[in-house]
Length: 636
Image (cartoon, rainbow, N blue to C red; front, side):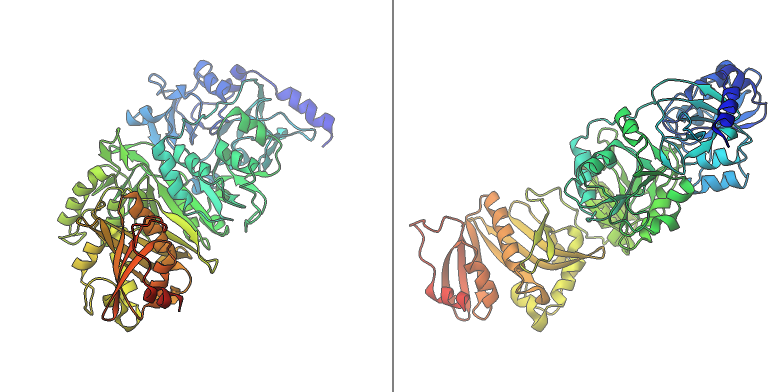
């Protein structure tokens, strides 16, 4: 096609919003552009110039602009059906003036393609045409790609403020019936400042994300807080339905590069963009940003082609079995299924992938727990308990995949707000989800910090406080010690590990005792490879310390690392030092004490050294010298 030809046709299509709207016939289905690409002049025109309309249906997903067509008084002209409920149509759906269609976002284009949801008219907003006569769908390709491909009539606002985006976003002007020139800034979605709760959630989510992972993030402060916590990662990628300012910031910082992606390497793949004007300007003519429709971005099979795919989505509530409610609130429709299930299932099938649901632990200024025994009447389950892997709140991470109901229940209670843990545990006991004598997970300890450390073998481990849900993992640690090692090093002399005693081990008085574990994480699994606990004697203000290191991990520096961290915890609690008994044959444990830089006082009693390790400086003249016999044993 010659330039003159399309330019002449382009000029013939230019009209005003009033004339364009009057070309829409009654009884037609109208698709409105999504997100920040909502054609607001045409939407206003539906109200001002659509007096001839009757029994029309308006459909769309989330839009950032106004929705005057759902206001009382317009019922005879049109009725709205939402694929995803935004704030601008929520009241209308609640009051029965509009409808909601529950559907996975990945499947909306197929509804349109097969004409199960036939598109008669598409109202869109596009960029000015290039020299070949192609306009760009700009910041929203999502379901609009299929909408414009199948619509009988397309009416487009042409806005110079609409970015020209790359990917599957182009449309030739010959497909457009009417062009309405406009000039207004796109609506912005400016995030509120990240508060301490969101920041804590973001850090917990970030702890699950390795270098080279590919990310999907939803809408809201929690995804933005997660991005803010990823500044030290390397070569992250993006395959997401929504692109935000936070993602732009990490790309500019060199954190998100896409170089390790297994699908569309080097491309930042998304279906729609919502954010600030700076973001819209940044994506303009940016070839690294690949705009794709949701039948591509949200297809679970496509998502799974991205190795190490990390999907991060939100929830309104989670029950104690792991069911996720995300589209209803107080028994009424609130948002929609959206892409949550698409990405949960896609990430679960990705090699190294992790589907994550992140939420605040409470709602209504802390008066309601989002982790609930059962959902209220009318609540809808968006993500089934069988699909859920990780649930994250500001209190930590609950890994539910492959866990039974008892284990799931305790993991979720442990990350619930402390004010609701007793109530949740009581409800769980009534439903026989947990043991009748199960202890309540305590509030955060003063020494709650979790640290990633590197051993002398260059292997990475995590040193963290023991969780009440670690009972079974610790039992496994003890049973796998050679030569009945557990009874000599820990607990009492016996050949079994009763649950009651294991519960006592992990149910701590945070003032009088502390317990840390060392974990090795591989392929999404966490194995406890060492544990240490101390208990304080109030009479001496010394802590009796014991330690177990898994046999195959001995000699790698695990014990020294654990001793160092336990000493830090004890010092912070004002404890004078450690006391313990070490067998004369346990040279490894003696070496740990000897190299700890604590001041040691020892006494040999039969086959055991009775030790006191003081935290005072070694040059303190008030303490006795190190026992020569212990020094010789440690050196050997």
